[in-house]
Image (cartoon, rainbow, N blue to C red; front, side):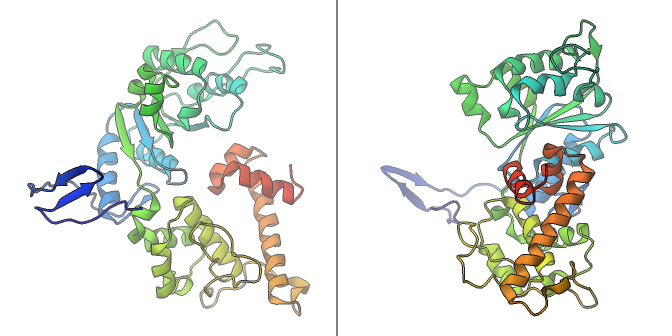
Length: 364
């Protein structure tokens, strides 16, 4: 599978029965951001610095914005960067994951509801649009929004007001809307499964986040960022030796930046980098777990081994991993008050995998 190639001017390409001749073109100058970070965004490659320059410009406006990209590329990070660089930075930033909510609850989460609006509505609930007044609302996985709510959302964007579910009084809001999806909304518009008027209302500005496999030169910068986030003072070269870094640059990263973050956390927890197969699957039983990645000098173990000493390597490793998962999940669920959608976003972990881990450790 060929994704990209360099060809010289005058080259003729044969694609099936079609021939394409590549002619010499003029030089195109593009603006690059003058730093390797913008808010929570990180990147040194020209593609990312060009994207950050565009985002910095977009932050000065209130235009609606659509962020496209594969799962795990960091679309919410882009939304946060836009918000933090805008004049709304001191105002609320609200996130609604349209793909994690039951269709019957999306309207309540977006617009709120009055007491008694439906069975179980024992109190008034303030929705995300109302909570984000004066700030920014980020609608993740907008392609999952049910058709009936697509019309309701379009009405809010046009009128800049809404009614709570079960309410009669219009509530005016001043909110900037940023939406994101990993789906091809243009194709869904053509198929009639997504409203064209809503699409054009959301996609006033459109940005595409590149997958990690297209920006592997950013790996050292991203790994260092995740190390510091985890509270580690380890150097990238100590954790990821040169040969291992070269293999990481050849890896396809199907889970993108989210997978990289989990990779770094696993390396810190286990004291060695986990193996990465071409298809992203764990190694078969009995195979070595990957290249060694020592912790920085002076750092103690992330978890106490307790009475694991004297056991075999694999048994000790499994025990430490189990302890790490249990401690991490316990703290994560406590911080997010049991909200799985919030927990999956904070952990940069797929909801289905998080639910499996919670079941594995007997947590609700």
